[in-house]
Image 1 (tube, rainbow, N blue to C red):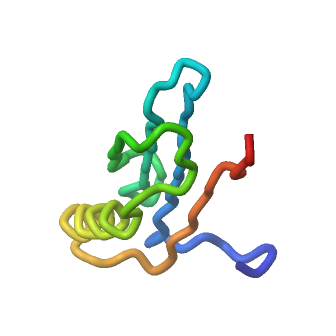
Image 2 (cartoon, one colour):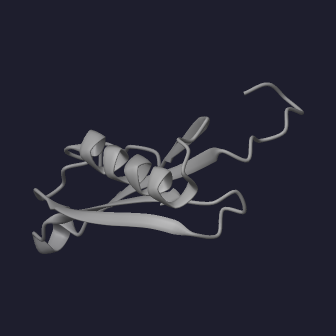
Length: 92
């Protein structure tokens, strides 16, 4: 995105993160959230249980497709821009 360029009213912001409790041997939990309106105040969200310590979110394309379909249903148009934020992936 160019500096000083206004964000389109048809922008979807997506956030993805994975939570681990590996010391306790518990499965990891992945979360996916996407904005559904031009004020970024309505959201689609989904979660997924993953293998212990798994950092890469499985089937992220399925979550993205569902979010885009929900956006289309609510707005009658597809998002023009999708911005994805992903928390840093660590080795530990």
